[in-house]
Length: 253
Image 1 (cartoon, rainbow, N blue to C red):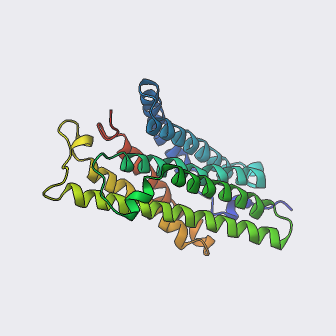
Image 2 (cartoon, one colour; image 1 turned 90 degrees about the vertical axis):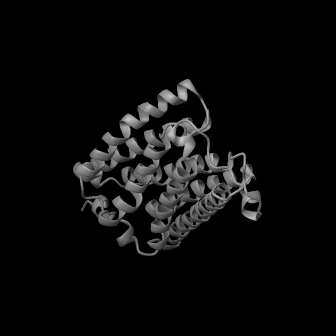
């Protein structure tokens, strides 16, 4: 008897993934045009993130509506890998904008975040562990393999959480410096450059909410897969961040 894997993972709504795939498409075109005109890392990586999200939501829509896909574990694993690894790009884009500030505060967190190679290694490790965990927990034939897969997925979540917290704290420190009497208060011109620290604060907070949700539900997968929680705390937070990244002037020229 076929197993409905989509239902087991809480994939029920057909309309929601279609809506978000459509919403992401114009932003994909926007960031693609920006990446072609100015091929800097932030534009390139967010373009890739939007493409990954569109693909993930298309697959999720198929899982919600096509019987053969609902019963196909490999399709579900492909979706899980696409969705969960995509966060790498969004977090690293926020990290790049925060650490590119030319008036950074002094402190251990600031010095740690300026070690770009170390941050990239941590994110790459989280992605690798997440992919391995998804494959082992989904395709494992023994209890030991499945448990190992679940553990690797949790470790990936915890690494992402630590990196997100570091970016959020660095943004808070930047805000304190820039809003102080002697601090840099932003530059004149486009709204993104004038109020950049506020946009970065909101973006980093949204990413922290997203990752806090996955951490809080790491041992409660029924809650994590519940679309009533998953869409507002994961999908919507990411999408708002993508919208804010498009603010004119936020990405330095």
